[in-house]
Image (cartoon, rainbow, N blue to C red; front, side, top):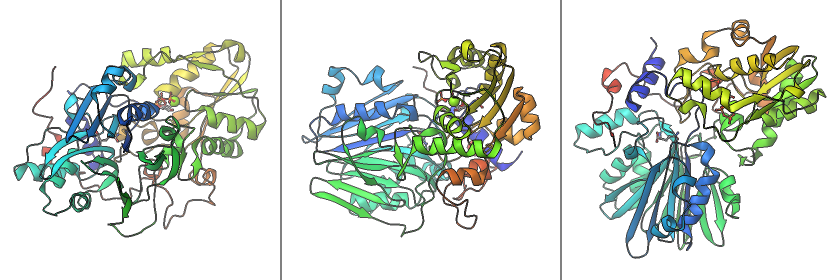
Length: 500
Ligand SMILES: O=P(O)(O)OC[C@H]1O[C@H](OP(=O)(O)OP(=O)(O)O)[C@H](O)[C@@H]1O
Ligand SMILES: NC(=O)CC[C@H](N)C(=O)O
Ligand SMILES: [Mg+2]
């Protein structure tokens, strides 16, 4: 077993009550963060912002507010934003003109209430609430050191480590304490924190995860994606830069660059799958980039056919691009049922397969007797593609050609995307022909690495200084992976399991 595998296994055990595959199926989203300072509707705006970011995490949601009477208020739930933060009473309870919020999909620490963010602590000098999108690659190592030094961790999430480090810092100012804490962290993070007077945002030195600054009638907003600004009618100001710490107070906004300046290396997977298509990430429309990925795919691996059919939801923009480039008509040959939850949260493989069936159905009238090109954004374990190919054949297709608008995913992620262990990634196990045989398609092709960079508007990948974090495809991890250790301590499950 490789170290990579061990670490992922450790994460899984650490996270859950054990059973087999609950966390190992498809790609799962990552988290979404939101913050606002100096607006009378802070809680309502945060709830709306989180609702727009719901695609980034459906496991849990939480909001912490602060009012000027020295009171922080916190409400955190397992489940969706709309189920817990849409009533007037809830919003009223969360009084205050400043708020931070989080939607979670766990990468470290099980999906239990104690790990739901914002995490809050009473520090010397006042309360401190923190929200984290990403994953620390030395979080387990630091956590163990902290516990040895006497820290009483209230959660099992990596994000709490920052809180613990801020609490221990002897710097006089909260911003310096925060900077001292994040300087000890490795991996990926977009953080949003709230103190009595400050809304603080930070992006890791490479800017792996996204974070933007907006403005609503003078109130600063921090959010994972621009779609969270759009929903509340806030103006997009700019992206938080890689390695930037931004501090918003009633007196204005200040920026710090504690890591110096260096080129950014954001995660390319935000464009492939995670971000919402109406968001603008790194100055690029996500929808447009996905369409370009589809167009490039058509240039690289076109096959004669009658119809281009997307695998909804996230395959749609790429399929439009493929159709436009190839001239093969686009049709909604698969209909997605919007009342079905995500397949990956199903507890067993058999129920998950059933869930996948409930999610998609063939639009027979558009399929029967036709040569079909199916377009999806990515292939992880192959559960979706296997089922979809069979479904399209059953609907009477003459030929089924599968095309993926991203390169094969061969490596696990440690930066906030919860991909399965390596040996469950189809492309890590099989070559192209074996994958084709596995999913039962007549032909199979992926976008090339150079092609995905071209779709981003670049000449190609700069192998000396890659423009994006693309380890899922290349295995090129841009930060140390300190927690990839053979140390069995990491594999211990949480000692306390919350059962109610
Ligand atoms: O190879 P697999 O293991 O089946 O995983 C790949 C699938 O998972 C993702 O979709 P998902 O169902 O998560 O969400 P979507 O509806 O947003 O496309 C992705 O878009 C692929 O369709
Ligand atoms: N997907 C994420 O961004 C997760 C954030 C954090 N690592 C957690 O597990 O809560
Ligand atoms: Mg999909």
